Image 1 (spheres, rainbow, N blue to C red):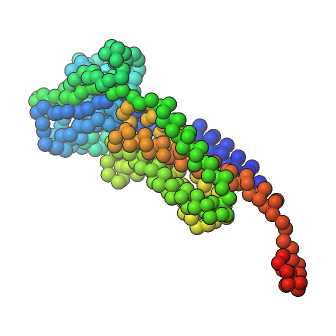
Image 2: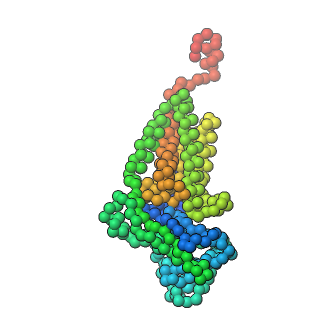
Image 3: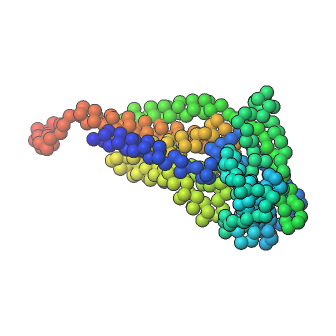
Length: 370
């Protein structure tokens, strides 16, 4: 019965993953990682209250205007493209750049009505003085690698210094930055480490769950699940922060809109850990189910960082790879432990001699041990 229930839950998880994966993206076409690092270096001249940063692993720029004045972003033909005013952000529907920048791949053709020589037709796109947009000047949009990267992909290369023109009234402002190639790690090494770690952890499921060693494994596994669950939530929060979420409200809104599965997975792993530490009878099933969720929704869903040098989070990519690997190892390993114990339980019960109610009375009467 338990085995059939576990199989059904696993099938349901796989179906949910297939349906829910697109919701994991925190932007319309945010990448799961890249090997090109976009860095904002300077605003010249600087203006108090005006800040710009690179978000979504360099896929977008985010401009925040707290100057109390209107700041314009100019398009690829020098036309007005965006206006960030005190009452919100606006885009020019007559600017071809508006349509080209709708996707990261710049594959949206401008309509015939878009003409950079026409007067701006402003449309409000946000109520905060913040604008986020793709900009072809700041990232690599070609399908093939740059020539210097193709010749020597194992070293870091400066691809170009870029400039995005802004305007404060009639005063020009230059937003400057750099685009670099950063060699990616070998994903095979990370996957091999995950496989070995998960198998070693899963092998502990061969120990009798009722013995001292088995109870120690359960305690250690529960602690690992709690930490991995917290890590899953941290990964989701990190992606939202890198996507431009500001404040607690902004992070919560982003989590509910695009990171609900990883968050529920993390919270479920923490709950399963508490359930196991409490010595509940279905702890093995809870750990197996929570482990499968961890591996799928918080591990595999973020595993693209194994082969990318720049991760879509607000901390170093190396730390992200370690965290994702730990989540996968604990998730898969914990699932194996739970499944092995569930499979062993019927055999243990079948092999144990049945004790009837008459045995204790018979032993007391004869003075012998049952």
